[in-house]
Structure formats: C-alpha cells, structure tokens
Length: 182
Image 1: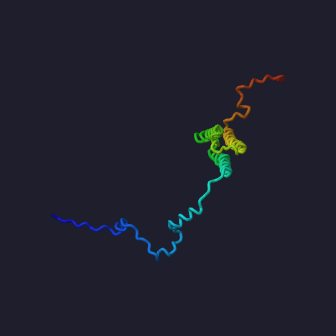
Image 2: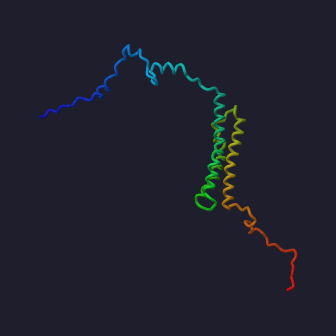
Image 3: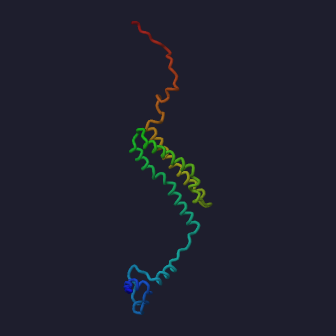
C-alpha cells in the first residue's frame, strides 16, 4: 500500500479560515488612512446626518418639476425628427414612409394618453398648475404632428394644388366664342 502525502494547504487558505487578529492598543491609536472609514466612524456619521423626510410642499414642487420635464420632452425630439426628415429625402421609399408613420403615430398616442402620463404627478395642491403642464405637452406633440404634415407635403402626398382636384372639376363652358375668317 502506498501512502500518499497530502500537501499542506496554501498560506492564504489558512489565513482565510482563521479569524483576523484583534487590534492591539498601539494600532488603535493610529488614524485610519484617507478614504477609509472604520465601522465606528460610519455609524456616528449616519446618526449625525440622518435625512428627514420631505414635506408635502417639497414633494409637490418635485412632482411639478418632473411633470414639466415630461411635458417638454417632445420638444427635445423636434430637432432630431426634423434632421431625420431632411436626411430621408422626399421620395416614396420605405424608410421615409415609416418615418412619416412614426411622426403621426407617436404624437397621437401621446395626446390620447395625456391624463395617464401625468396621473402620478397629480395632487390637490397642484391641480391648477398641472392643467398648464398638460396644455404644453399637447402643444409640443402638435408641433411633432405639424412636422409630419410638413414632411407629407414635401413628399407630394398632400393635395394642395388645383391639378390634384381635377376629377371634381367641371368642364368650363365659354361665355363667348371668337371666329376668325380664313
């Protein structure tokens, strides 16, 4: 029978399984290095800097600020959509048609869901101010719709000229006729 010798475990395994040595009195007199906070210092700091809960007025102000950010969100999309409209050209291609479709679909859905969008920010004290926020939101989405209408017109899909309505025009009857002798 052969006896196998098991090698001793590495030093780091032994140090990992044993508890850390206790600090001596001399070591505790040394300050902590910069950026390191001992557990005692952290607990004292958290007790001292405990944050008080916000008041109702502060919460209403924060909700109103957040609702204004959401209301002005469609205005931030205007330059991007205008550049995309310019870059896609005026020809009838799948990319330009899909872009125009998205220019109409997005704002219409947003206008339909205006009350749902701002429901979480509504409070009794901010009800009158939220009406203005919602109006700005609807106005910004209408600007996106106007951009879509402009793009459709640039593509030649809007009937804006007289020749687009020739099917409904009647034949003109002249009031006088002029005959020239030959």
